Length: 147
Ligand code: DHK
Image (cartoon, rainbow, N blue to C red; front, side):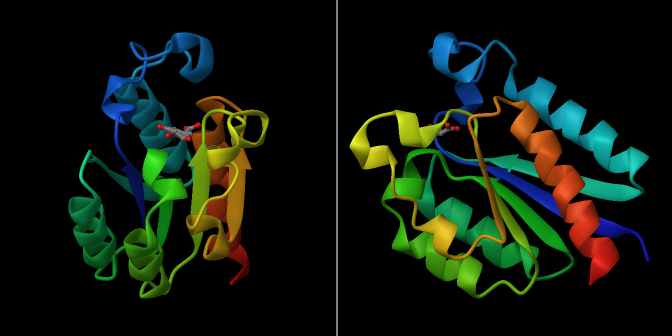
């Protein structure tokens, strides 16, 4: 059966392309979602994308993914570094999780070096720009094919 990926983006990622382009690049979130949807389709996968600036909404979206989504790609934005609630929601999700950071968080301020989500993620991609999202689609496809 055709599998479905949920792509989640956290706070301020709606401003992609406008916000600190020297760090986050010039592509918009729409560009990213379009590229991921096309890549997923090439791999015979469906992709559903959401963005929220609100922690509780992201928790709700992760809980929703328990019904009918086979894997999650998440860029939790700043909540990576603060949110036990998002970690708990992901721990209640059975499928593979790939965490994406557009920037290399390890080259930046020390408060960005730790991510709660990494404790749960099957894979973490950082510093590859928006291409990291496409790597995440490819990685989920590989995980789906081998499990
Ligand atoms: C995005 C954010 O919004 C920051 O708060 C994170 C992450 C890094 C990124 O690189 O995509 O610290």
